[in-house]
Amino acid sequence: MGKYFGTDGVRGVANETLTPEIAYKLGRISGHLFKKEDGKPKVLIGLDTRVSGPMLEGALVAGLLSIGAEVMRLGVISTPGVAYLTKVTNAEMGIMISASHNPFGDNGIKIFGPSGYKLSDEQEAEIEALMDEEDTLPRPTGDGIGTVSNYFEGSQKYLSYLQETVDHEFTDMYVGLDCANGATSSLAAHLFADLDAELFTIGNSPNGTNINDGYGSNATENLQALVKEKELDIGLAFDGDGDRLIAVDENGEVVNGDQVMYICAKHLHEKGALKNETVVATVMSNLGLHRSLEKLGVQVVTSNVGDRYVMEKMVEEGHNFGGEQSGHVIFLDHSTTGDGMLTAIQLVNIMKETGKPLSELAAEMPIFPQLLENVEVTDKNVVLNSDEVYAEIDAVEQALGSDGRVLVRPSGTEPLIRVMVEAETEDACETYVQQIVDKIKALGF
Image 1 (tube, helix red, strand yellow):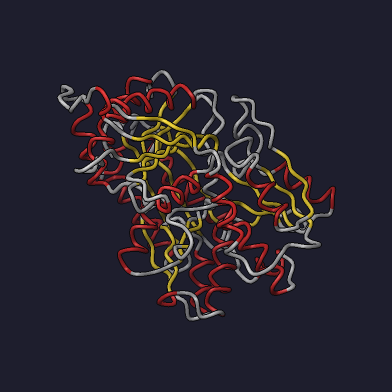
Image 2: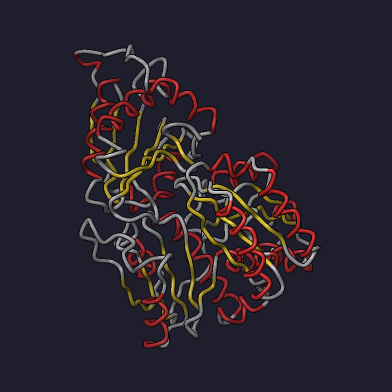
């Protein structure tokens, strides 16, 4: 991570730490780096429903036009929608303005390269190196200045593509959608209606300040209540920018990203469509996912937390399926990033194909108790380099043996150390998490 780029692009409090001035410079620098030698770079820009989105979009557009880019505005669209359209329109770059699941006051800028993949660490470092330098980049004049146009029909092109990835219509499927008052607020209902599902939708009335507020993949209580009240077959909760999915079964129970990954991986495995019989997960994925897939003869390899790192390992090693417990699920045959709506229709498609309710599909993967606690610290690096903290971690790992695991890592976006313990019982999780947390707090970091 650098001064500007975190684990998922540039993110901060809109108009405070993420200002229009920063967005303008990002537009100029990224436009310059992706500029074609013989012409103007084509750049797509989408955004979620935050009140600060148009402000940052305007600044980005100004920066891009000043470097000579041809900008196409997509309007409100999901992050994977931007990635897909960047690839299929042969654009040099795609930009999504969103802070994902964060509160409305935050915002962020994610950049995709010409093939629809998020930027590598090296590409981000190249942009970082120019951010605080004197601006000596070219300033074209006359007809060398860039142009801007609207490509709002891109959303329908993306939805039509998603429909093509499933084999069944969803007739007689009663589906609850929670769109987090975010990027999928109008998109998801259109997608499922076109697939003939019976729909009940909440979290689809964005007003600029209510994104992720009590709705979406991080707050599923309203969706769980809806599923039980209306006796639905499934509930599907997206996050603010639509790149992750958390499901709710017909009993109102949450089905998390690991369980969704298991269901989808098993389906791909049985159809002979799981490359290398391997799933890429992260170090946060539940031990139950590992053991359940191993019983099927499917290997699990792990990456760092973050769907970009899952994707990098998938591409590097030639795998086509992976994801995160948080609900980022990547079907590389269809998308270059986590995609909540794509995952949602794959899940419902599996239910239609197998005739099984979601609870039965999810029950095949036992979940080990897992406890995560965030510790606020002043210096994450000091904690991570502390011999005393690591001695405590080693002691817990020895006590757990092969019946659990420990993960201590820094937050990519906040001054937090995340302490996670997985064990056979909840009591053991609580005991061992507290042991490590107490050590960190006692050292006064």
